[in-house]
Amino acid sequence: MNIIERFEAVDRRIIFLLIILAVVIPLLFPIGLKIEVSDPVQRFYNAIEELEPGSFVLLSAEYDASTMPEVYPMNEALVSHCFSKDLKIVSIGLWPQGVSLNQEAMEQGAREYEKEYGVDYVNLGYKAGGIVVISALGEDIPTTFPQDYALRPIEQFKIMEGIENLDNIDLIVSLSAGDPGVREWVMIAHGRYGKNVCGGVTAVSAPAFYPFLNAGQLKGLMGGMKGAAEYETLLKQTGTASAGMDAQSIAHGLIIFFILFANFFYFMGKRRRR
Amino acid sequence: MRRQGPLIITFITGAVIILQYFIPHRPFSDLQQLFNTWFLVIAVFALILGVGNLGKIHFERVFRRRENWPYSIVLILGFIIMFGAGIIWGIQRGTPFYYIFWNVHIPMGSTMFALLAFFVASASYRAFRARTPEATVLLISAIVVMLSRVPLGNFIWKELPLIGDWIMAYPNMAGQRAIWIGIALGVVSTSLRIILGIERTYLAGK
Image (cartoon, rainbow over all chains, first blue to last red; front, side, top):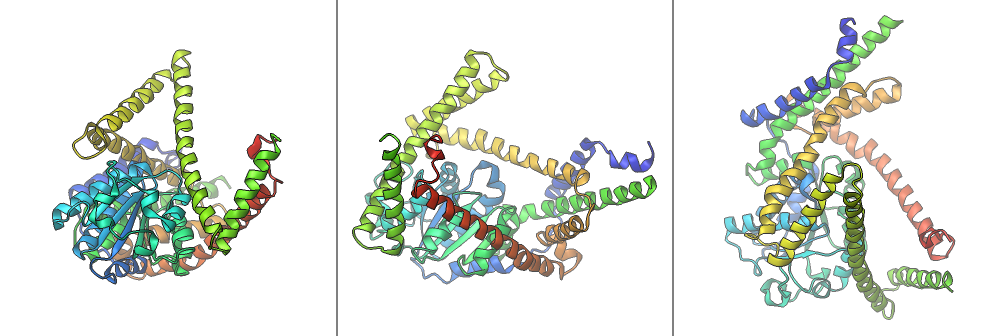
């Protein structure tokens, strides 16, 4: 076996080891690469900034543990932004696990900004049905969610006074890792009820939402950990996303190196075989 | 009638849902709300059905000692513990459900997804080859977008994120739009076929 064939058939455990090092070393010793804010994230931020204090944001959590490293930092940053502007958060989950994850992010934000459950924010929990739940919210929120996530009647919460349907909501934010998610909110909440919708999605699914963004159906878009890191930059905070950007940068760089390196040996081998 | 009944129900429900979109007034708006409520109730029963089916498959696997049956015990125990903890104590902070969710489920779920990074890296080394001109274009655009999505791209060359944004906003968007339009047309035609009773596979193909 010559050197070209050896490089072509490198042991995958070496690749795995290099990836571990590429992720762990920057986490232990941050490089501090500068994070530039992209236009979709700036638009997301502006959509929140434009709201008057006391406005209602409907925050829908459609993600789970597997996509938490990407989406949860968005959740934290968004809640922090909303509470810092004295916005009210009414949250739901179209994915069961999104409810607990979102609740944790809101409780963290509430401690930081001294917000009270039931007055400044509420979690209405999970409802099965996906797109039909959104359609039902457009007609009647208290009927669709008569209790919060802990099975308490929503009439006892001050925040729910006067909230009948999506007409009373000023902005909808969907943090999603799949279906049902941002697409369904755009289709029903924006398409049918004319509500402004912003989306936070995983990096791998972000390209699919550019048509909605450029058509104005989405007011703003956060894509993956990078999107969350950009949002943290706008908030002048250093959260988990910003901390992870160095590791992601090096991992991306390493994967690109693998592609170029493997292609170089592929062409060398091809030439040799000729 | 066993075949015609579901077809009539499907036709009426589908027709009303379409009509109320264009005529959002009574009686169509009321009917839509009613159908929404019915759907939400059915969706809950579908969940129960799903759980029942999952339980049946795994209990059977354990009793018959089929391949990988010990994993089924883990699944059944996991389900019973989480379900029981959620029903008895609720899911709020400080409950057993909360503790297990944050200290067992979340780390395991994140770990499973994190493993993808290793497979992506391995696949990028072994499979991503510039064999054809099309593959070369894909490879170059993938490299540019990957670099532009992380601060490293900006560090290497300030213009790189702009090129990445351009790829996302034009070639990517054009392709995505074509896909979405195709999907939408497919959904419309399939929905019409179901509403009109031409497509009957949901009736077990009869």
